[in-house]
Image 1 (cartoon, one colour):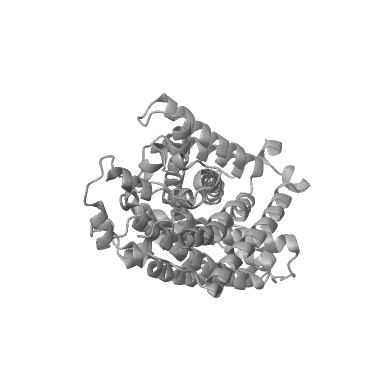
Image 2 (cartoon, rainbow, N blue to C red):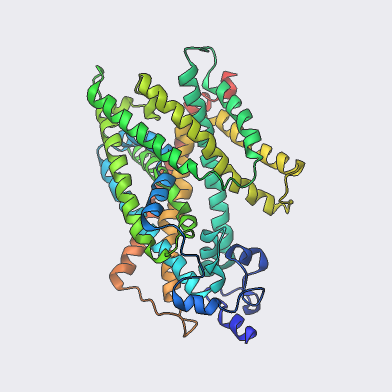
Length: 468
């Protein structure tokens, strides 16, 4: 009976070149989805599948609390650069901001449905899953998909950690400039790296749930302060609104995509829900809230400063309230870096087969990761450049391209007659492929613009190494 069950759970979605005998997930992969059938799994797993409870406790996250965590996960560093993004795209950027929000929300809903399908078809995923996104990639694209998603997520996390270092250095420099005016952002990059090194040695920061609250509070404070400052204290500088060029438009597009980059972690949050079939409703609430936060600060910031707006909008406004918000964002960055660098470090340690216990090997690996982030920060110096590159290369892949492909592959597969039949209508399929094509082409154009901006002669000579 056990052997029959294993056979029916083999996935013929895997590439044709993979032998059927190796279709079942290897231990290094299935451990992320919980116990595999026949290897310590409770016999009631099929009953849980039919009951719709998915083997989870009913004390998981509800819709509203899930929406809160989704907003807290997305609304962060990217919101500070939205006025600059609109300055690059012109007033078209507001439409891009809204349209991207709708498309990413739509993709997130499809991704959530993909996970529900995985739990229906493979009971081992009904338990806690550390890597839900790679698990979906494995079940739809096989081993190549598994490695692709892991590499893209690794690059994304490293890019976000680098952006966090650069933004922290800018915030520290702006707050402490009256006290130590001789220290530049480059000096503070090194100082922030020294602070982040011991923090990176910590284990899994599961107890840092309050970081989501702090992140949302800091973001709300930044939005309110910027909006109030613009409305109450208008600048005396006459803003200019030049038409966007091809390169500047896609630079702004990359920044806007980075502001939605936190959506790649949505499967992990969905994994903590008591009823994950209601995840799309939580996504709709979350993205409606994001629009309420994003559109005012992006529109008013550009309206007030025009093309002269700073990449970090907090550096374009001044006053005691702004200083408080800078400190809040700085504290948030410290916790954010700890959380972002942890899965990055764990992936590296797993690849090198290092022990999970604290030891000198962990310290060396994690210190090396922080040092690499510091070196990239010193070489680029402008956190907007790294932000643009990550938002152009990896985020479109994870938010535009892969979710529709996962969804269509899972719905089209009918290898097991006991599986629930899911059909994708012609109009929906056309819409899904449109999202894939638009995301891929826009990502390529934005990547070209981001690399062009980073490799520009002026940018290369403006690195911290030349200043030192």
